[in-house]
Figure 1 (cartoon, rainbow, N blue to C red):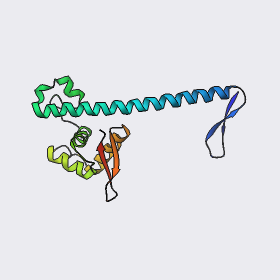
Figure 2 (cartoon, rainbow, N blue to C red; figure 1 turned 180 degrees about the vertical axis):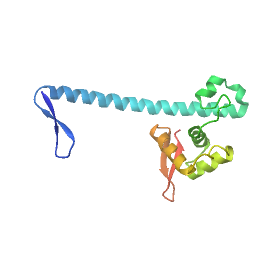
Figure 3 (tube, rainbow, N blue to C red; figure 1 turned 30 degrees about the vertical axis):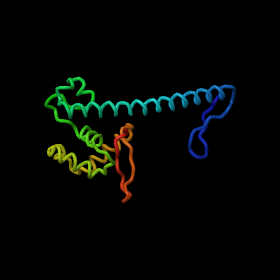
Figure 4 (tube, helix red, strand yellow; figure 1 turned 60 degrees about the horizontal axis):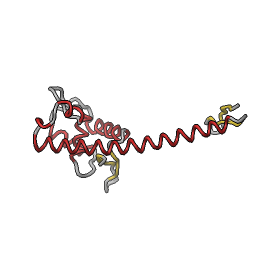
Length: 158
């Protein structure tokens, strides 16, 4: 029998009251190995998706929207109708097209240079962009670094 006991650190731990302890360790080990492998696969897939999106975006820039069908434009994050692209998509586009890491203020300036209305409803555009960049980092789409001034910068994963 295995009991869960709260230790002195406040964290729960297992106490060995029978042969099930080894079974639990085995399950935890297997789960850890599978999760690690899946996370590696996800990183590889995200890199490939990024490469394909950049390729398709480049083809679109060279040959125009007509070269991509509506469904393909939707898959790579290009709006297909009159609906305005959101701030998250704008941040993605700015980072994808940049050759170096950008600070949130730089992302805001680049967004404003291409879409003057997108940030109008934002009380603090830099804070909103920073939140989105952090979320993109959690999604595994961007990496965070620091610039020489010690400020955080973000770059699209290649």
